[in-house]
Structure formats: structure tokens, C-alpha cells
Amino acid sequence: MTDSADVTAPLAAQAAGAAVSTPRKRGSTSGIGYLRIDHQPGFVLHSYAWRETSLIVEAFTREFGRIAVVARGAKRPTSQFRGLLSPFNPIALSWSGRNEIKTLVRAEWLGGMQPLRGDALLAAFYANELLVRLLARGDAHPQTFGSYVELLRSLARRVRHDAALRRFEIDLLQDIGYAMPLDRCTEGSAIDASAQYVFFGGQGARRIDADIARDTDAGTVSGRTLLAMAARDFAHPQVAAESKALLRQVIRFHLDGKPLNTRRILQDLRQL
Image (tube, rainbow, N blue to C red; front, side, top):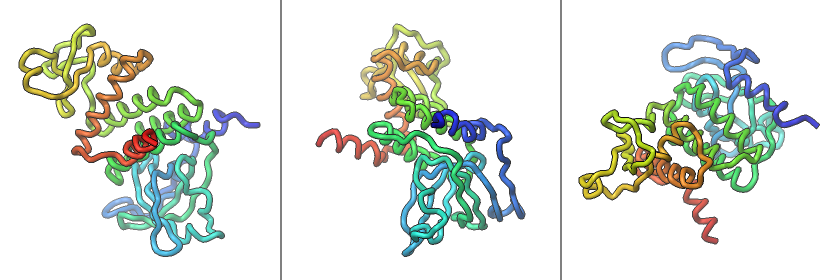
């Protein structure tokens, strides 16, 4: 039996930028869109029905970021896409078209990962929703693509889900321009591990004093947690709890307060 690390190696190499398979571009790449892209590594993030037999697929690709394609006839039993357009399957996508929604021409399986179950599956769907909500279509984010591949592999290996998600969230925010200054205060001074701070989503950390304590209802976070987050170290229970709350606050800020569906579903399931 092939080890999961072996079957995912081709995709991991492509995510890191190795010359495993170079996408072929056909036609003009200027103006309103590409004519044809071949063999682009990616994952399905979300899909929904379009007309009677087709699907609109939101995918995340290594070199073209988030894209939308129509998979014509994908719901037919004899479709070439059947069984391929599910989330978390490493696939190579080929598409064509000039409009914002392209036409999917081909999808090829690149190698399997261990199936995700339980909390790992919910964590992966949460990551997918973050990508759909925070990434603009057509913007390349190869670093985030690599972080996403590593997240899926960590979840498949039953690595701590919370730590893997926190690393992915921080990497994503940094890559899209919402970098979180975790080792410095807003005024530039170094974070003190023994101090307490208030973290503002669009600014950063401010050390708690009488004015801040009086003027804000925001939650607090320890300097120890901020420094641990900067080092991507979530082993301590206090760091794990505070970093989860802090990242939830920051992501909500950048989503203009709009809730995430997967988080609401998870909360509902835990109340059953």
C-alpha cells in the first residue's frame, strides 16, 4: 500500500513551486482573461448546481488563485468530471474562456490524500470558506496555496487541528495584506510576555492601561500568547485558547462582522 506522504508528494512539490508539471497557456493572456490554461494544480472549494446537468465550481489554484468555472454536464452519470470535483481532492484543472466564469475543459486526479473525517473534515470546510470569503477571484496566492496543502496534509495525519488551523489563518491573513503585528505594539515597542494587551483588528496590539480598559469592550490577550503566535507555537493551553479567540476577532473584523457558515454549523452540532 502506498503511504499518504508518497501519493501527495507530487502535489506538495507543485505547491512549493517545483517543476513537476508546468501549465501550458494558450492564446493571449492580456485584456479581459486567459483563453486557455492547461494542467493547473488546484482544489475544489465549493460547487453548486447550474441548470439541469452542470455545476459552477469555485476552485483554488496554485498560479491563478481562486477561479470560477462551469463544469458542463458534470451531474450526468457518464461525465468525465464525475467523482473528481469534490473538495480536498488534489486535481489538475484545464479551462478556457474570457469571462469571469470560465469553462472547465478537463480535470485530472493528481494523487490522493487520506480521507478527512469528523473535526478534521469540518476544519477543512472552514478553511475553504475562508478562502472563498477572503480571496478575490483571479489573484494568485502561491504561498497560501502551499499553506493550504500543508493544512490538509496535517489534518489527514491527525495532527492537532487547532494548531494547524491557527497557522493557516495567520499565513492567509499575512499573504492577503492583513498581516498581524504580533511581536510589536501599535506604537512600535516590543511585546512584553508578562503584560496584557488589547488587540484591534485593523491596527494591532496596545498594552492595557487605564484609558484602554475604560474605552473598549474588546477582549484581552497576554503578551506570552502574542509572542507564541509569532513563533507559530500553539502547544500551551492558554496560547491555544487565546489565539483562537484573537484570530476569530480579527477575521470577523475583515469580514465586516459577517458570520462564517461553517462556524455556525459547528456551533449548532455541538448543541445537539
